[in-house]
Image (cartoon, rainbow, N blue to C red; front, top):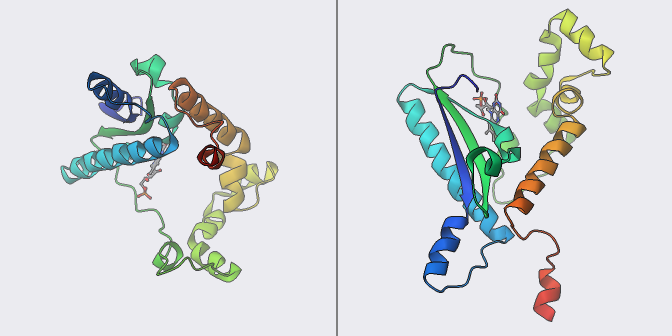
Length: 195
Ligand SMILES: Cc1cc2nc3c(=O)[nH]c(=O)nc-3n(C[C@H](O)[C@H](O)[C@H](O)COP(=O)(O)O)c2cc1C
């Protein structure tokens, strides 16, 4: 990431909307959850189009999830009503790793309604991923066992995306929302509509 020749950050930008509304004496109430979600969608669509275009030109790309917790106001001088939505590093790939295992289609596609899988179906869908544990170098597996990690799933939440990590990232995301003045707390739409 730090060596990438190009890093693109996509943002939720309701500040741009606010300025335009103000210049036209229109009210601004676009500081609410629907605005965050729709603007997030806009930003990620744009960023993914960049990724598709870059990859079609033979470039390599990698999304970086922790942009969501970065303080963009401090780093890039973003104003109120702007928060990070996505980030991608772009460069010339110096390796061509094999494709990582994919979940079978039936594990991710639901037709007409959400079908709750059985435990056996969940196990079957993740068989390849679970088998990764057995392929680990012995020293690595022993090191994980010493940490109380006994399978691939535990490696995910106990080893990598730990509770402390998830909470830290989430706290920073909430800070970003508050710092950008998005109105996400203390909202009770039901109460307000009855008033
Ligand atoms: C929302 C999102 C966040 C990601 N964040 C990171 C990251 O922080 N670091 C990283 O190395 N890769 C990150 N990736 C890239 C994935 O690890 C993965 O390489 C990419 O989605 C391509 O999937 P594939 O390797 O299975 O084809 C992220 C991908 C997505 C969609």
